[in-house]
Length: 158
Image (cartoon, rainbow, N blue to C red; front, top):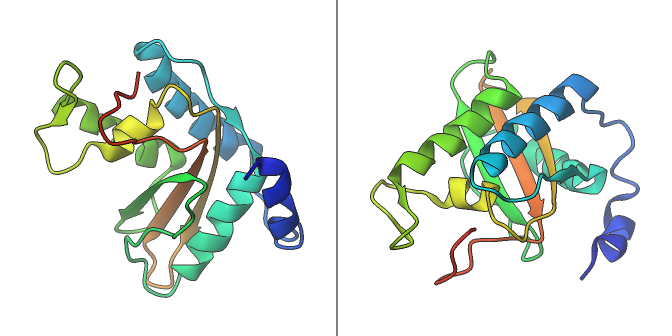
């Protein structure tokens, strides 16, 4: 399924949701700095992915739980932070910190999870769209959607 087909699913949902240009740039810059470090092409911002991220994040507004959406078409990273002070850059940097536990030579992770990092730097991923909300509890919830998705078992990200 292509982004073009997915567009029809979200066109009506995109009204009323905006992400500031500064926030978009912070999401993109943070992602692309990590990607440049390992020599993979930069991501482009995709508003439809951002809309999907916003719609899903709003579903988590009431509980702010780290539960992934069920889309088989996108890769997804989610972030929760206590309080409302967390920025787009903070969320991406939390995922990038997983790099210290990822071992390229063996394609393994020595920490609890490296899949946020590996999705972020996945070579074949070309587009990203993200959303940041404040949950009813006052905590921060961030979702980033990636297309095409990564994290294929047995494959290296770059």
